[in-house]
Amino acid sequence: MPDAIELLKTRRSMKPREMTGPGPSPAEIETILTIGARVPDHGKLAPWRFILFEGDARARAGEIIAKVFAKKSPQATAAEIEVEKKRLTDAPLVIGVVSFTKPHPKVPPWEQELSAGASAMNIITAATALGYGACWLTGWFAFDRDVLEGFGLKANEKLAGFIHIGTASKPNEDRPRPTLSDIVTRF
Picture (cartoon, rainbow, N blue to C red):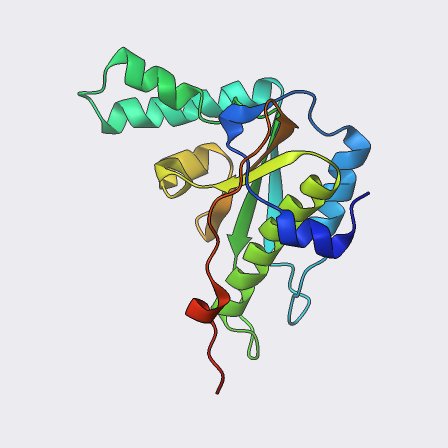
């Protein structure tokens, strides 16, 4: 297992189209989700939950995405609709991180939403530590209420993102990172 600091210093997202199988085993998925649930959570509200898309569920989700896309884009070509069907099929596992807020006198919604973001990042870090590629994406369908309802989200729930997880099909290249002097100030 890689050293934690080295892992965090070198972690990078991998494009889903550059992922293949195998995906995480059931035990690894449980580990990833356990780590995803171990995040700062002021008030112990657990303002997030997870939806697993694996196997045929990825194609079923794609059917929902494509159906909504075709309804809302009547000019769409068959090729464009086909692209929408495959949105979640590149990686063998996609985890939807669902965010919701609960009324609380000391924990504003923003903190609860940040907790969901922390959960998504922990999922990515855990998958990377286990040797998988991972990428956090959204896309138009992550914000479309008809798609979200099709995925079983309630009216008060949002999708923080889809975490695509799989085995690298090629070496992953890093991208330029911000220079600390450009983003750090001292008060």
